[in-house]
Image (cartoon, rainbow, N blue to C red; front, side, top):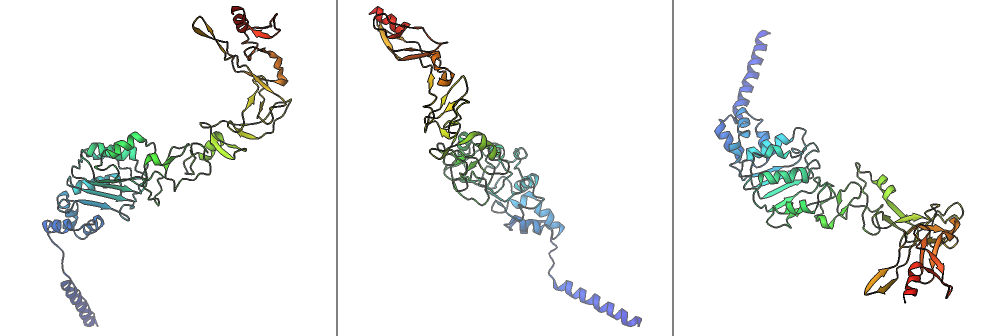
Length: 386
């Protein structure tokens, strides 16, 4: 019985030896492994080759063998989306490729990847022609890409692609600086909407900006549910944006022209009236109807409701007269409005120059003894001077 077991063990051992001899061995020294790794174009394939043997692993971690290739660093999913892909890992890959690197392509890096430019201060890239960092929401163009270019690029590139990156706080000055790194300023791919699925190539001057968070959007991705009818400013629906609260405070709807306006473009008021005469409660912009506001009771009326409680304003007089070769201006008012319910008799009027003043601004009016016309001091002075 024991002899049978021994024979079976010997047969299994012999089969393993036969299989091992039939498989080609890839146990090579480091110099041969470096030549092999240098001719593997894909980064993920190079890293996978480094797992085969110790010699290949040393070759894959050697900056020298990377420079033997055609100097393109292309990092795409699943390598770029891997949990271990960090700023330091990207820095080491760039160092492995060497200063002869001509193309950098990075797509779909996780939000934790920031392109920490301070770590690239000792990594000049004098031969870089193409820089493509796309769908990397954690990379800020202002705080990461531009500092990276300032420290490592002293020449003009062929193209720059940054669609899907963070473009918060970008302005025309920074966009101009970004384009200064290109031979042709038009060879730039920017999508202000920061949406990975959007590939619209636009310019900051052609985009629209959220009034609340100042993020830029292309016209295809921007939604104008809450938008100003004049300037086309709008509030976006991004998770971190307080768009709804901003719209309630700064965007108002005119019931006459059925448009929404921001505070910077038009004043939209409600016709509330006062305790004596209520208004129609309609919201109206200042171009569809003028607001008539009483500064004493705080009442406000639109043109339609103003007839019952007429509001007069302390406008003064805009007449001029010639006096010894000069122009003397009549006294102007303070602009205060007083409705009829608050006693419009608190105004002084001049029938001669059509001036009207409140008691605080009145220059004094009286009835002319000659024509019985109510005149102000200025008109009376002019009449006696003539």
